[in-house]
Amino acid sequence: MQRWGVTFPLESVPLREHKEWLRELADLGYTDAWCSEARDLDGFVPLALAAEWEPRLRLGCAVLPVQTRGPTVLAMSAAAMSLAAPGRFVLGLGSSSDYIVSMQNARPYEKPYTACRDAVRFLRRALGGEDANGDYETFRVRGFRLGRTLDSPPPIFLAALRPRMLALAGREADGVFLNYLAPDDYPTVLPIVREAGPDTEIAQRIQICLTDDPEPAYREGRHSIAAYLAVAGYRAHQEWLGHGELFEEMWSHIDKGDMRAARASIPDAAVDRFYVIGGVEKCREAIQEFLDAGLETPVLTFVEGSRDPREMARLLAPR
Image (cartoon, rainbow, N blue to C red; front, side):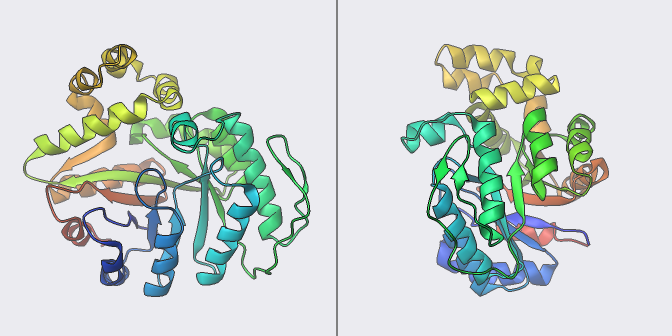
């Protein structure tokens, strides 16, 4: 079965007005709806609403930071979602960044790899009805046992950038959520996942802008790229992939504290690596390039502003 997902909720549409759109997505052949948790809405409430509004969609969050909630709160929230959408909920986890964890949530950002590993192991046991109490390297749990039995514990996806986390996703998660990759990066990334987990599901957001006027989309792309690649982990990710030369000038400006110059210095070729900008056929061809490279679950993320994202979803629906 070919999965075909979208990112929701749309920023330009009030949350309560997504009911009919989610139903339309399922009618159009979309299989998945994935939200996020970074700077907009939380990662559970939109999924809980979607579980009631449209029973045909698989629902997930890409991703919930493992360091902004305690492990038992994550387990209880995931259990509630699993009961609200039996067999349709995917628990997406990730290490996030020091910006979100420390600056925005006043929590220490320590040992991100180990924190993800410990969270996956704890949640696998807790959601499976096992005694998950114990001393983990990054936290300790005492006196907890989930009060509900789940007939279908949720699959766990792990966001991963570089080799250790990619291997961890393949070894201990059910799926990996990739980010900031182009199709020509897949030969570098996928073997690491597949060696550790041959059946691990491969998912990634694809930033889509259907437009006849590309310049606003390039501006949006530069703004987002500079913000993401200012984070140490994303910088190391692009350097590991061999793309450092594309961003050297940008990083130089970031190091000097000049984000405006950093954004302006990003070449179109760099934006084109992460954003699909153009007409319907160009966007379809780009999605197919990802599928041919090994992506199993594309999650279309519509760049809002230049065109109604609901129209983009209709034009790029699965054939």
